[in-house]
Amino acid sequence: MCLRGRCPDFTWLPLSASLSRIPLVQRVATLSESSASPGSSGLTASAPEISVTIPIYNEQDNIEPLYARVSEAMNALGRPWELLLVNDGSRDQSEARLDAIAASDSRVRVIHLSRNFGQTAAFMAGLDHAAGDIIVPMDGDLQNDPKDIVRILAKLEEGFDVVSGWRKDRKDAAFRRNLPSRLANGLISRVSGVHLHDYGCSLKAYRRSVLEGVKLYGEMHRFVPIFAAWNGARVTELEVTHHPRIHGESKYGLERVVKVVLDLMVVKFLFKSSGKPIYIFGGFGLISILISAIAVVWAVGLKLFAGVSFIQTPLPVLGIILFALGVMSILMGLLAEMLNRTYHESQSKPVYRIGRIVQSDRRMSEA
Ligand code: UDP
Ligand code: MG
Image 1 (cartoon, rainbow, N blue to C red):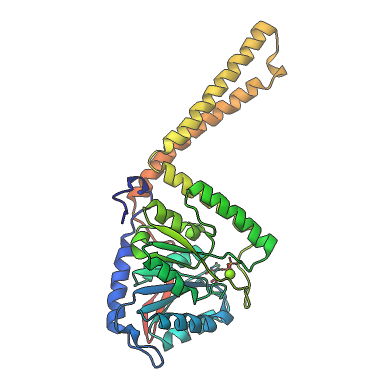
Image 2: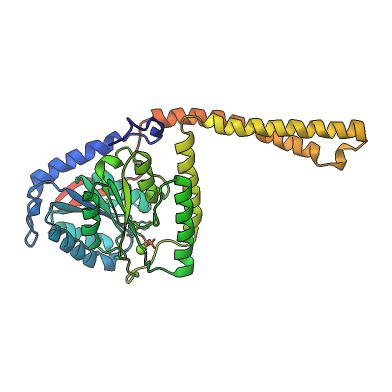
């Protein structure tokens, strides 16, 4: 599997030492501590192969049915699994309900973030603490169907590293959600060169190896298959069921489209120019200064040979603006070069802060 070796260009994603460390610790913890609770299938004797990770933000009425459906689907699979529920600073009854589930089933681990950090940070928290070699993220609002996990994993076994869900028959508001999402998906496909129909579908399956070193900011969880594909992973998609939201409400509105576009620019820029920002900023700056020089020469020519005064054309103003823009762009390129070095050389830090972690009868850490 290609990671950094085959893709030297991809070094802008800092390798997170903690990512590879934590799962090992967790794996040992899971091995030694897990004891099947009454009613559990007893599969916890071995380390989990599959980690289902779910972000939870004000989903109090979804939590219990979600847990029931996920455990039903995963038990049917017959492979050791764990469920990581990441409470992203919920302000309803989610916290207590999650704790109750963690207390009753040792395959469930609840990670309470200290406040609301957003879905992407919650995804990262789940990823950093997952012990399985296969990571299956999904939403906590029951819009994804846990039964699809079995199909998605079967697809993964066909020889893929990433299987991305495709909500072909999406059950969200047509104009406010589905249309912008279709446009955004088309744009992301085009810009990234990775062709999926539905980046926004949370239900996916990843082999851990393709996620190593992935660090996400903003709302970039939907771009993970792109990072993986750029890293050489074999990515495919599979149609999945989508249900309308019954309890609670969506945390997003139309502003998400703007964020997607901006995040996409960041991803594309960092990937394409991580080692050479001065070429991009500097190139733009030099072109700008060149056009500015042409404009000034033209204005002087007009004045000398045609008697046209400087204030009769926009050329002098254009020349000054483009010159200033060019100089600033070159300076920004130099700054970007400095930042680039800091970015690569500084210690990588997680994008979230954990309040506490709960697993069965044991409190693993306290903030
Ligand atoms: N979510 C989260 N933090 C947030 C917003 C959302 O953990 O700040 C979770 C939410 O609880 C759900 C998932 O992310 O499990 C998807 O959110 P939502 O259903 O609102 O998104 P939509 O389906 O409308 O795209
Ligand atoms: Mg939803």
